[in-house]
Length: 482
Image (cartoon, rainbow, N blue to C red):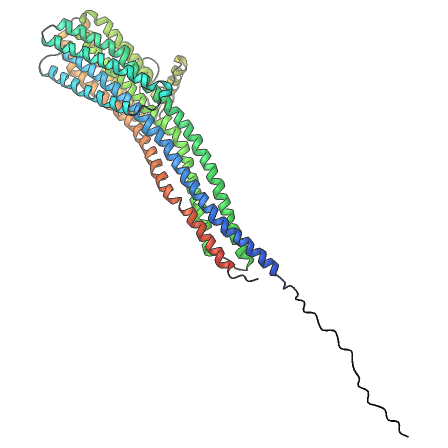
């Protein structure tokens, strides 16, 4: 019997349903970290770009202000004090010439005296408007100069009045009294005002060097951080397998170039502060100081003629001023008798050595002018000054011999002739020597004023570069999807 076997449904146990578990896609975490890093770069580029711009602007403002303090406050006052002293001494010299001459020459001398006293008043007003250092008694020094100038001009007025009434003796006495006031009160007061301002300039230039150097370091730090941020942006772009991002690269190159440019210019301004004061302005002030001594010597020639009884004293005083002129120009007595040059436009090393030895021996605060030569044309200018000075001394020696021999008419003719002509030449050559240093002085501060003004505008490039780099990184970041 056939056995019927029931068809059995072969059932296979169904596999349990697969659990819906998502395996993390390789690289998503890395992309997320890269996006976060790029966001940090964007924020840092903007913030440090603004910071670097502010620091660059402030560094140039501080440099400008430091130079402004030296130039528009310090040297302006020193210049006005020096010019005021020169004008007062020229006034005294013109008054002395008035007493020793007659006719047209006498009237010219009086006109010259009027002109130079007006110059004195103008320079005094400049000084008065620029009194900025009450700590060192600047106002008191100016007040002393003001009182002395008032007494001096009253005594000179009395001299003219006495002369107008025909009393030449009293006119001469009034002049000598006025000269005493000038030499013992007015000139020292103006010298004190000059000294206060020179001291202020010395402090200002030393402070300027330190201040500018500190700002350079601050700007270097900010620029380096900003450039590192830009490099970080380029690294992030490279990790996306892009070779370059022109906004980030351009921002990096421009900021690096601008930071280097500002560092060079600020470093030059720091170094030039000393050059401007020590090498340039010290020569300007030194020549003007020497010119003041020349004016006092010139006045003594006229005084010796209208006051022959004391001519030996006056001529002796001239010799003392001659010694001071040579001391400030080249050092030892009679140092103007030999050439300053070694050839061309170079100072003789032996002349410089002798000048420095004299400075050391006398304890002078400043070296003689020939030992402070640094600029083209300066040595030749001092040599011309020397030549013209020796010619004036030759004319003076002739005048002194005539006065000593009692030949007062001949001495007066020499005074208004050869001595006046050679003195005018030595004055011109002194001004020319001062102008060489003045030109360098002006070139330095004008250059710093210009570069710091331009750099204040260029400081805007740092935040603009930061925004440009941030935009470049943002573009690349937007192409990353987690």
